[in-house]
Length: 234
Ligand SMILES: [Fe+2]
Ligand SMILES: [Fe+2]
Image (cartoon, rainbow, N blue to C red; front, side, top):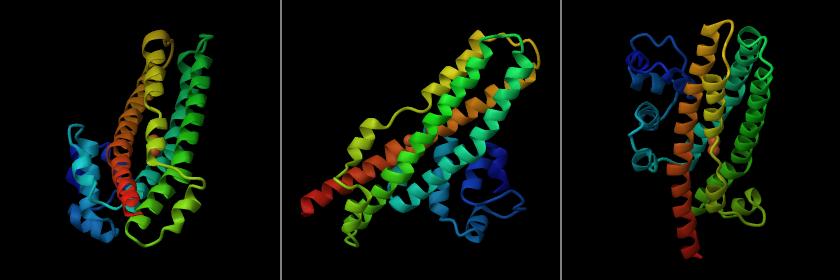
């Protein structure tokens, strides 16, 4: 497991989402997963898709249950909202004070970031409260276990197609935010703080890209297929 972190330190936050913390000594990935009651195959698929952008998660992750996939996606939301966003917010406030003290445009950065945070909260809330419960209910109906949950999770009807067409790109705004810092604001103070904020923004963008890829290439097609089969079973 330690080799995995040496290979890509950004995986630290991914393993945390599985409830695995540092300090695993020389234990193998399999041993650590067993200890934490984590599905080893699923863990490896998530790690591979995060580490290698050319890896096609749809080919392998499709085999896992909707429950397992949405549980990981929800934990990732918590990581963004409880850890990453508060960290970045503090850094940005500090950066405005220390790097752009005399720049009247710098406060725009703070409001831009706040707006972004609110969008991210709304985006993840809709997924956690509507899309994921509906997806789990669809799987339960598909497996013949319980048909009633679909109506209670999505009163009046819903389709994963709706989510697919509304699913907005939460990464592109981060790109704009990075660009404001890179292109338009000349720092006058602490340069290393500006670099740190930028590095954090790049890392978050990468993480969000991986996250959206799983939603769009794994969750949506999987639920879509079940919806189609359920229709033909009626
Ligand atoms: Fe999400
Ligand atoms: Fe999303």
